[in-house]
Amino acid sequence: MSEPPAGTPVLFLCRDNAILSPMAEALLNHWGRGRFRALSAGWEPAAGVHELTARVLRRAQLFPAVLRPRDWKELAVEDAPTFRILVLLGHVMPDRDVFGVKGNPILAHWPIIDPLSPPGPAEAKERAFERALREIEARVKLFASLPLASLDRLAAARRLAEIGATAAVP
Image 1 (cartoon, rainbow, N blue to C red):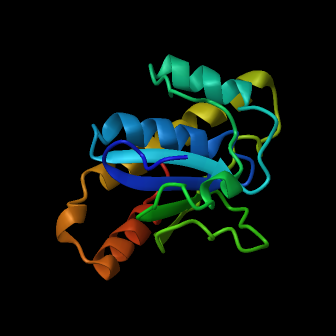
Image 2 (tube, rainbow, N blue to C red):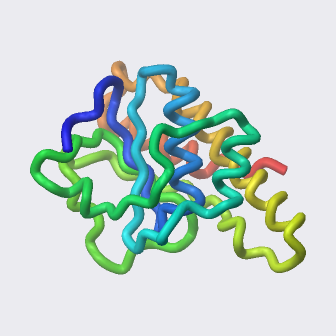
């Protein structure tokens, strides 16, 4: 594995890498306009990206180059990218050290609600996935507008925490 081709390397991490983190990866690669190179992974990767994740990304005209769950361990090897920022997504936190990625990245947490959590018909699930995409997009747009080059590590961490605390979108 080699260094990401361009931009500040960012890793989005969630448990299964099937819903939230692929959305965040696609959104930052879109809104970051080359300033960032986002990847995503999970500590218990699913067999595949959730079908509703793929559907809402297509509907938003976001077409990630690779849409498959990735185990975070793939990004903890010697020739893996050196990440500057690692963003944990969702409310489920890892129960073991998943921060073995290179680069001593700045850690942030964005507590997005898992769109699989609300019970109900398929239409309700799809609306929940669309809402999750909007919540992540709102945060990603704020993140993409940060002047990271002029922020020291502490200031960048503080700004990322503020973005994580941003109120959910309706």
